[in-house]
Image (cartoon, rainbow over all chains, first blue to last red; front, side, top):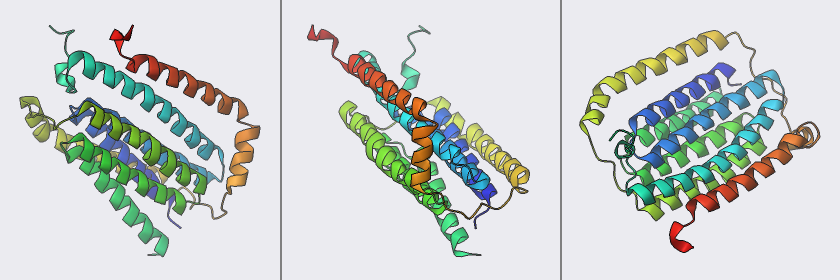
Length: 100
Length: 166
């Protein structure tokens, strides 16, 4: 069997990479994708704990996380479309009308 | 090393490689494809842990629906490559070392804190048990999510509608 800590370390690494991508990327769509990566990393930890503790609640929670992520993706991408239409750019460094 | 650990290491390497590729690719469509690789590898890891239902949902909803939506929007907006700025060059020299140190630190402490945890239990959970739990104990949150999706649908429609149509 694969020890639970292996899964948790992988989950932490993926979450950290998601944070790095969130900070590094300047395209708003890629930033949004890194949020999805972080959600996936958390899901992996949920399933690993569900398996380790022998309880199904973790998997139920993963199911709800996926549903909420789908709803979030729909609304978030609609917002991105509005930003692209109003500002004419997807670069977050150029969406700075509050600064000027 | 057992077969399961070998499969885990392969899938984990694929997932991490996909996540790194998500960061390194400059074109959003390449990042989206890298993210799909991560999600498929994670579905394999769910299968390895005996969570077949979650693995199937991961493939169908995440790689199937959500990522198709992303790719669709990238093509709709005709998103091009990211442009480089002075700040992004600085981020490479300051951010990459900090990110690597952060990852190693977190991985070390999690490995240390959870190494005493019992090995994963062997009894497989069936999709039947999962659905019983979902539709008995968690039926109210389940119905609530359908409401949430309805609201998200309406919100997306209202937001993405063209203003000049009226």
